[in-house]
Amino acid sequence: MSIAIWSSRFETGIETIDAQHMSLFSAINGLADSFRAGSSQAQARESLAFLARYTVEHFRDEERFMREARYPYLAAHCSDHADLASRLRDFQDKEASGKVVTMDMAIFLLDWLKQHICDADMRFVAYLKE
Ligand SMILES: [Fe+2]
Ligand SMILES: [Fe+2]
Image (tube, rainbow, N blue to C red):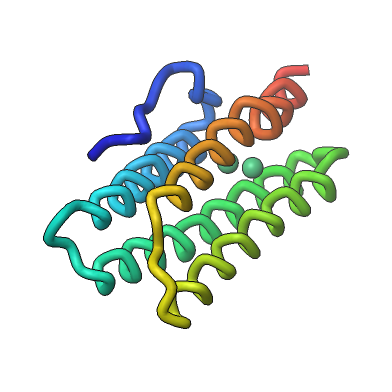
């Protein structure tokens, strides 16, 4: 089930970042798919692990871009990233302790991502254009 639908309003114009954001959207769809009837808890675990890994990778690359551009709001941006990374670890811990990973988590991640791209990531794009 596609809950994450890409649109041009998420485009930063930075090729690597856009490609990674699109992959994050499809990873969230992968997580949503793992809640379909007939899917196992193991599938949800795997999707969540992939999403967590890929998110950390994306954050690292994005922060490197920002550091290279001497972005003045890097620290605040990194702390937003760290917050989400810690939420993802919480979800993984919950799942590992036997709690069911739910669609609510996928929706939370999607909402966070959309908001973060449109506000925080776009602020960086605006800074680059200055
Ligand atoms: Fe970001
Ligand atoms: Fe981003």
